[in-house]
Structure formats: C-alpha cells, structure tokens
Amino acid sequence: MLERQHSDWSASEVETELAQRAPVAYGNWREDTPNVRARLRQIQRWRTGFRGGGPPARTRLNYTFVWPMGERQRQVVEPAYPAPASPRKASRRIFLYNCSGETVRELRAKLGGAEVAYEPAIKPGAFAELHWTRNLTVRDGLLGATDHQLLHHPLEVDFAVSEGKKRASLKGVLNLDATDGWIAFRSSDNTEKEIE
Image (cartoon, rainbow, N blue to C red; front, side):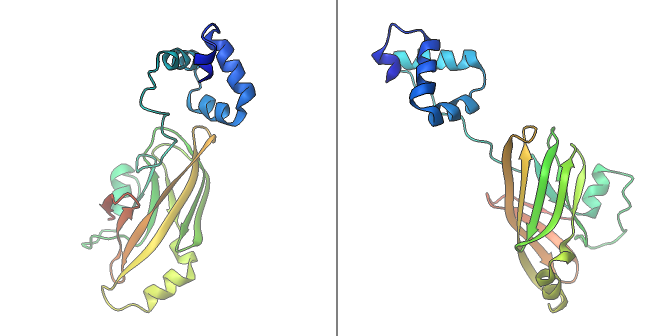
C-alpha cells in the first residue's frame, strides 16, 4: 500500500519507511529475503500489482536434515562401524544420521518425553546415538512386553540449522518390536522408513 501511495519514492525509500512503520513485519520480511536487491525488486513488483506466490516458507525440517537409522544402515554409510551379524531386520541401537550438507547444532532428542540425546554439533554424514535405555518407561515397557509385541514411542528432535540461526525439528513415532528391536520410523508427515 505504501509503495502505491508514494509512487514517486524510490524502492529504497519505501523500504526505509517500512522499517519505521512496521518494524516486526519488516524484520520478518528482511529475514526471509536477506538480499537487499531482491527486496527492492519485490517493492517494484508490488507497485505493478504483481504479488507473486507469497512469502517464502519458513525453514521446515524433513528427513534431509536428520533421520533415524539402525546399526546395519550405519554400516552401509560408515563401513568401519562394527554392526552385528544378525538375520533379524531390526536394530538394538538407534542413531540419528545427519544426511544434510550442513552441520546440525544443539541437537536434543526426546523419546517418549524423556531426553535421550544431546549433541552440540553433528557434522554432515555423522551420527548421534539415541540412548533410549535412559527412558525408564520405554525400558520397562520393553521388559514387560510379550514376544514380538509392537511398541510405539514418540520421537521429538529439535536442533539448529543455518549456522545456528534457525530452529528445526523432526517429529514422529519409532516402532519397537519387543523381541527384535527398533524396526521403523514414521515422521509426522507420514514418511515411513525401516530401521535395520
């Protein structure tokens, strides 16, 4: 609206006035569009009435940042890792794998509401182990389960991306076969992968 009221102003003058009139909205826009020249081009498009497809989406985590993996899957990525030779298609240990191209920082993982992992930084291609036995509810539930009983435990992983500037998360459910071990993870967007 401001850009149409003052059509004689330059795009940089409109941006300066926006910063003064609506500092919070301007701050969000500046964060979403860090390139000054891109912001000035947007102002020019607003003058013509072209609004584009809306603001860019905020950082949203999907499995391209971190994803749970089992021991055999870790051995595929890291051949030196000594995975047990077992015919079962499950894993007794579970890891979060950084499958992105950037370092994930301040990673905290909760399983069933109890913290089971903290890592200050995980480099690309590295792993962080989920110490699931720290959660007494999960451990006691496993000990009291019948053979091959399927148990479901919510997993919440919170971490920082973009050099620690933005927060992201992974949420879903880990499935545990009481006899064999961890068998699958289903994320909140219904992406499901086996754990081996």
